[in-house]
Image 1 (cartoon, each protein chain N blue to C red):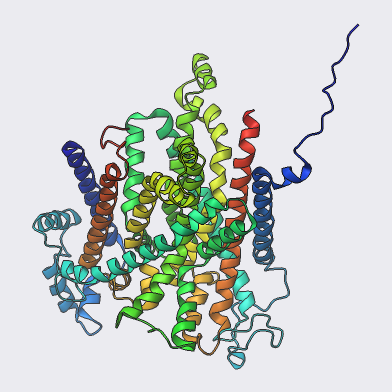
Image 2: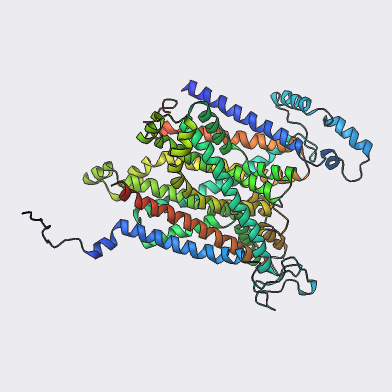
Amino acid sequence: MTTTLAPPERPSAVSERHLARSSAARQRRGARVKLWAGAFCTALVALPVALAGLLPLADPNTQDLSRRRLPPLTDGHLFGTDQLGRDLLSRLLHGGQVSLTVGVLAVVVSGLIGIAAGSAAGYFGGWIDTVVSRLLEAQLALPLLMMLLLVVALFGPSVTVITCVIAVAQWPEVARLTRSLVLVEREKPYVAAARLLGLRGWSVLARHIVPNVLRPASLVVLLLLAQAVLLESALSFLGAGPQRPFATWGRIISDGQDYITTSWWLVTLPGLVIALLVVGVNLLGDGLRDRVRTHKPAKGV
Amino acid sequence: MSRYLARRLGQSLLTVFLTVSTVFVLVRLAPGDPAAAYAGPTATSADLARIREEFGLGEPLITQYGIFLRDLLTGDLGTSYSFHSSALDVVLERMPYTITLSVAAIAVTVAVAVPLGVWMARRADTKRELGANVLTIAGQSMPDFWTGVMLLTVFAVLLPVLPASGFTSWSGLILPTVTVAILQLALVSRLVRREMTTALASPYITVARSRGVSERALTWRYALANSAVPLVTAVGTRFAALLNGVVVVEVVFGWPGVGSLVVRALETRDYPLIQATVLVTATLAILVQLLVDLAYPLLDPRVRLGKAA
């Protein structure tokens, strides 16, 4: 006959209230607030931008000199019109499509370069590591924005060039993170096992190590996207942004600068749109990172 | 120590050399004729040919590069096409303004971010800390040129209390400094918070507390001193990045620094000026990083230069 020993019922000194006030619970709540607020801000900008073609908006490039610089909320122009009578909201949404495309593509490209270079440097060490690490260090010292302007001046401000330029500016962050993750990962038993099974270096790296570092490495993606959007807007503010098919956000702000005293909305609203999107993406990225950090110990137990 | 220094200096020189060489090739691949920019719109083709001859622009790229390297060794970076004087002098003349702005911005950032980060570490995971965190993220998320234009409009146009642009008096430094600092605040304060949270939870803090050391001394003398190395690294890196990175803010505020110079040099295809700017800023940024590395043993006696990996 077996008897199960039930744990004795004892009143616990730790009540629900204590648990709710614990630092872990607070961290989880903070992360949740950030995630929701971030998702809300991002969606508020990204959804209209994505649907710009479907919304009932005036054409972003139709000029009407008789309706110049109308303030917001007049004649069906929600954000008013610019110095050439173009609908500002429509320009922002269509320009945003270009900005966001550049941002997302740049992050994808820099992620690919960064993960390839970082994992190779971390796994193989030796001269590959030396070269990659030196490159990372050198890029810290480079006058980056000057070089970016130079390259754009050289190859012209097309979407492809600007995407590549931003990707080159951002790959060190991914590479450094991936390298440090791979350095830890390659000492683990499963790597030794894979090697014993006769896999060569590259296949161990690509089939066993990289899938394991992909998740932690991808946490920086959202933060990089925020930076990429800001960098693109800075370039286009300096006149080195894409012009076709639509002017992007930085360009719209630099065009509106001359009218700042008479038509505040031409600079204020585009800036708020950028800030709202970047705040959203940053908060999302931050919340995601916090959540993973608080979840981590639970996974190890 | 001296071997470490020699190796680091060698690496730095190599980095500067590679950077300058890359720029040399890049500018010469770029479309646009510097001779036409130099001579102005009224120049005849004979003038252009003469100018090309004079600057050696007709030579093959490799010959131009050889001449460039030979001159570089003697400290001659060529004559600026648009300023008609030594490119190095033009850059060095502008450099103090960029350094002033960067130093002021870093000083303001540290002065605000360190107390803020310490406060955030002590109030970790409270609602107020979350609010401060979100605020600094918002500051980091605003495009710097936009922040600049908005500050200008409010404090120089609507309430004319500060000068709008250029460097006429020291008060002209305020707006650009604030613009740059807002962007840097989040990075530094978050770093301080992270380091301080770890430090405040370490055993030596508990030991010191049990010996009766006051909370104030615990925070500022014990925990902060142990967070100094990562903090100095981050501030040094940010400073080096600012020396090259205040381009946009300089353009917005008409600040007479290197950033607005380089934008102009790019427009006029002023090869020597572009090269000189890149050389000077890269050298300066690398020097700052080197100084930061050399400062480690002063901050933390456990660090021995050149010994660790």
